[in-house]
Amino acid sequence: MTSRGSGRLDHDHQLGQDQPGWIGQALREHDQLEVDAAGRRRLPLAESADREQQVLDRIDRARRRKPRVREERITMSHGSGGKATHTLIEAIFLDAFRNPLLEPLEDAAQLRVGGSRIALTTDSYVVSPLFFPGGDIGDLAVNGTVNDLSVAGATPLYLSAGFILEEGFPVADLNRVTESMRAAAAAAGVHVVTGDTKVVQKGKADGCYINTAGIGLIERDGSLGVARAQPGDAILVSGPIGDHGITIMLARGELDIEADICSDTAPLNGLVAGLLDAVPGVRAMRDATRGGVATILNEIAKAAGVGVLVSEDDIPVRAEVRGASELLGIDPMYVACEGRLVAVVPGEDSGPALAALRAHPLGEQAAVIGHVRAEQPGIVQLKTAFGGTRIVDLLVGDPLPRIC
Image 1: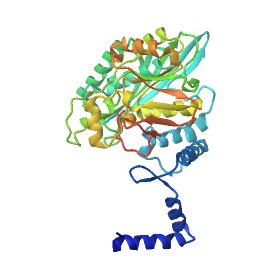
Image 2: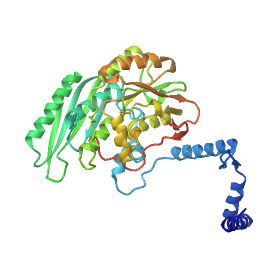
Image 3: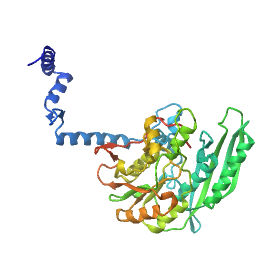
Image 4: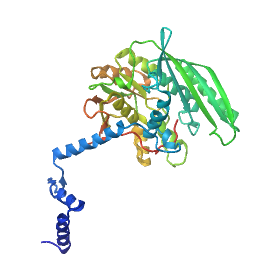
């Protein structure tokens, strides 16, 4: 039996098929789809795979285009750590300052001075609020610079500290920040040896900004870099991700969400030293700050011309962070950490590398989250908890507030 409604639909469907335009073409393609056991139409496997490859090819072509800043003015998305940030760096700064030491775009430059190899890095900190559960802008500035040197394979030694202070900033808060920096430097075994101070008019800054630079000594043979990743390599993360970014968002008190979460800010030089002692063949390390783990995975795929496949089930995320992320509509893979690293090691060394990380207090929940492969170079894919896969691209826009 056919109802009047369904009969009308069949009639309209036939009229649509008779049309020469895109409507008729779409209907004819729909009728050619295979029907599964549940009565749903789907593409044949071969055609589905072909269309997936077409999508991946388009993404690859888009990424190979020469980067160009299309906006006339800087926006907040240019500081998010995602696509806009990478475009800004490559189209403006790299283009202006291009040289072989800068081109790898690692967390620290590797230099030769006399007979020594050193690492040099710099960073600026504009976190809001200045004080948050688990830390503040002071220890964040020290730890962030120590970590950039550490993942370059260097032993951090000396830091500079530049302060931009807003008129009216409480002296008691400045004392609190500098005391925090002193304690963090002592814990990491580094010294603040030079600095600068500027004061700007009220309303011209957000209380206190800090810029740091750091120098470390590279004593081990070989070099590290995401461009060295090879098919078959394992990818590890040193612990649960997203703690810092979610802590900062909740600390602002704008979301009316309460959770027992603290920033993971910590110096990684001891953890890194243990990993390099156990696995001298480590290919690359990055600390997962702006843009989170997802950004690092994309940097690996692009720089080395490889594919990356990670498993959602293997990525450690605290239940509190996952719950808050779901309420906020945020993917933890894009949320910043300040005491976590991502490491790439030869596949056969994944066991010793994991054991070395877990032997350190900061790496007790380390995990192997995926591997590098030759297929689909430049693309990061996530094997979801539901059994499918999805592309993990660079962050688009500025969905996350300022967190470092």
